Length: 499
Image 1: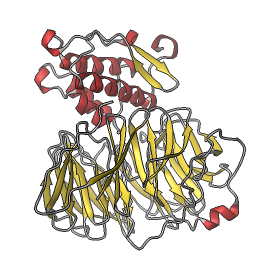
Image 2: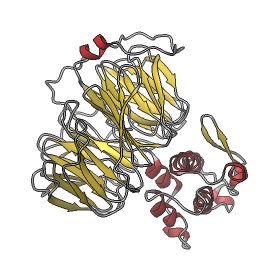
Image 3: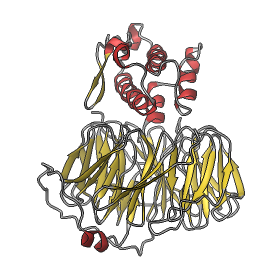
């Protein structure tokens, strides 16, 4: 492939890296190693990379998992033509450490490469408006259909971005803690590949996976309502409204799916890679590309409404917004630039340059814009772009989850709760995670993944309610509502807990 097509660009390179890391993590988890990983052992298929040629040597027979990690980094560097993105570069550097003891495990690499979407926390009083039946539907999608204007208006403009998450299974031992009730299992089911994003909307769980699959399941029963396939891996959280489920793929495809049936209502293909996640702005679906363009599509039919770029080479752009009807978008660029953008007039009221790189989208809530730059979480005034506060953690802080009272973020092994106005730390709790753990706030409880546990904390005090052992790690944050919490594991399993 490299001889024929040349080096991989950023999106496909990350997709290949994630697929190989997933395969190595699974093999190492059962005590085996590959032993001879190289270009000839990786097949590129329509459903992502597939690793072949496992030597099958166990650790006791001389196989060294750290050599697989070194070979992985060498292979990804080769596939990228000797270069890599700002997000991959630090990881590959650690994998190539001359001291095998300093290299991350394949599990750690897999966790870093798994998508980590952020969470939109709705108040308890919010009533979802999606109309999704509880029975399974046919999944042979017709083409050429569009969303009607009436369905778009009936949806009421309510949209969720994903809160969240991916045949090893889960060990359901329990640990009592200070009298808080422990979760019970409502149901569990196997899924294709790993769950990469997960969210809940109107008693339906929407998930995407590594096998180019989007699936809807009933949260009460776990019954699959529909399944839809995409042309390449979905590398961002879906946007769910009463009108459609919108998803984007790294290769540039945008899909609108009927939330009741999973049927494709329209498809749009950009001429470059899409980075970050799409968002709703009025009746437009907006996303950013690696060549620094912001594109807005008509939600009903998928036609392009407008495209904007400032013409600078900044390494890619990702938009954020405070809500569907907000007047401004907030654009973050890989080179550290952050700008406010007014779509109606195509003007930029302010721009600020922060430390590079910025590898994740901003989080805009109320009059604040939160941006993660390396070790630091920065809060900006949404009206002026002024820096209001900084919070410094350890490498790879997660995109914050913003609740009514506190802001939550994680780094390696720690969950932090911060004052949203000042950035002052209100409490912290250890999670035991070896990479930044997924975090979510659902029904007044803060959840964070650990090395092999899911932890539940009181969102205001940080008091640990319970810790729930899992045999394979979570790849993104749980999602839930109305007493049901969904989580996906690296063991290709989706589990619903009663909490």
